[in-house]
Length: 349
Ligand code: P6P
Image 1 (cartoon, protein in one colour):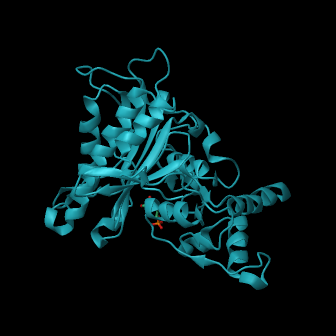
Image 2 (cartoon, helix red, strand yellow):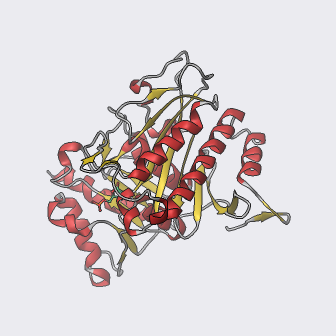
Image 3 (tube, protein in one colour):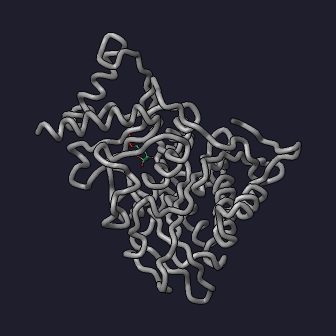
């Protein structure tokens, strides 16, 4: 239910996190870490909001020499800015032992000039950044793990923990309003940025995804590249109420995961980026550690489900920091149906 006030006064993110700490849901350090990330997202929101006026659109790098990330994808200037904002904000806080980002080949331990904490932060600083230049919502996605006991200088291998090990996850969506959506393992909650005051205000305590849906999100242009069970699953969706699913479906695809997932958390739906013959060799398109896992944690905490099409997303054992996976997440019943198509196919072949 949406409640932006508790006994009259709006509940800020700071107050919400203090109450979560008193309830024993977060440590003081984790509370402060989340506040640092939220503050960095406010800075990113301002940079993104300037659009063409900020001189930050377009590709990073110098004219004619684009800068590429580990995947060989052109970085946008705002990708690099968002990454730097999150690195700088978290360097001196003292809550982290290390961080990892889509924009960095390897993880980084906190510089030893600063005190180190017990958490590991992973993030996609600006997901969907190809949408920035056409003014479509983009977002920051983050995931928090514990640094293994006794590890003072974490390396990539210490980040390779399954999604069930996350202690917090969230995203900030830079849309018509800037919203922070967060879980610390006790429900999924939404905060809206009050630009006048500059603070995030609780606007939905306990987001809940309807179990059933009539709306799917997939990039249909990849249909001919999909595996057989995916083609059959979507084919059945498209036959509508005369078909095996017995109802008509609508489709939405923003091509910005944060925007698509936020819609699904808000009104239900199923999001899918399945294996296709183009991305099969890489294991999928979306990344496990800082896209699929945080989003799956948020979705499960909102009563939804998230799988790779074959297994629960949060139980996937990571083999690499930038590991990719197929993704099905959203309304529980629909994700179970899509997953059944894949498991039945595998059992028969
Ligand atoms: P496609 C954005 O580049 C992204 O990583 C996700 O945010 C989004 O869901 C997906 O890729 C879009 O992929 O192939 O439809 O452009």
